[in-house]
Length: 441
Image 1 (cartoon, rainbow, N blue to C red):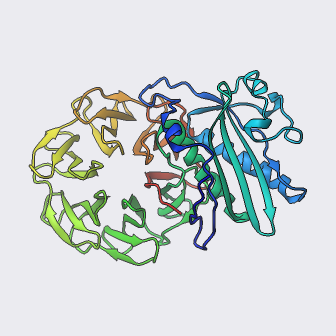
Image 2 (cartoon, rainbow, N blue to C red):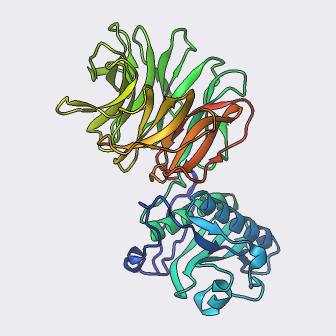
Image 3 (tube, one colour):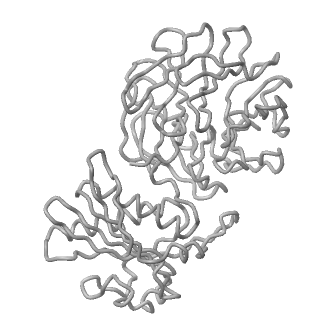
């Protein structure tokens, strides 16, 4: 067993993590072909967890823990969660370890993966033991033990979900990520923030103005956005940790900020020189250099993960199309040729695809295309307007806004366009979602 201490919340909380299987063996296991658009969901069973002592409070915590874990893993789109009513299992009589489990009871109901767990309450302290099994091989894939405060249950669940995806896919997923988005539920367009699954919504700006286009820095600490709160539209840069805010001070239009990966710099469209062009700025809004120079307006920049290229929208060919510029050489190439109105590029975290918005036949839809400009694929169909795509930090999901229910709402789908579902419910309309990187807690 390997024990290590980690930070779950702002207060120092010890979590004991026990590796119950050698990491080298875990790395050899591959359950998903992540390049397959027809990915088969693996049937998974998550029975109600056990209370490890006679403490009556543990029963409720055990149920809540199992439910939260099932809900988060279901959100990933990789699993088919089995109905607990079909289980040939009594958590009061069965154990949670390999030695005490009857795996035939699980294969009989179709479960290929199984997660068992136990919960123990010690005062205000919560201990959770979690194990993921391959039922057909009767093998333990990964087991962990966490200790923290009772209110840290959700953080423990997120951490174990990340461990499960890492073991099964080689990626840690998106469970520590956030959304920034715009909502007019207060009567004004303000910036809001929520967890990856739409929970824990909180309002970031209270300008009572028009605020839009949120953008995350690579470390998740800074949020840039545009607002009319001080008159003409300006870009604001907020330190989410301290609340300190700076604004860009140039005449003319200031829109569409986009952070350079792993640097305290961002690009934005400014018109202080006359035409709307894309400029590179410091994280405090000071100008570094001009990135584009054409007779048509250039907007909507999005950076490659290595920061060596930037995608943007330009009207230099007459109608809005997406282009890519290599920063070192200055070479510019046109990416999109199909469709007469292609905008809102969003570079995938893996660097091989760009999601974007295209208008055709009176509808706006989300597409993806490879970075060589080949194989454009439409992901949304016949659901009114769908726009502003943004990738999850592991590249497995895409969020976007849609008017398919009348008002604009935020939805999530797989990177192949499947499993489209609404992210959250709140008053008003929601626009311009922006997915953060994973932000360790």
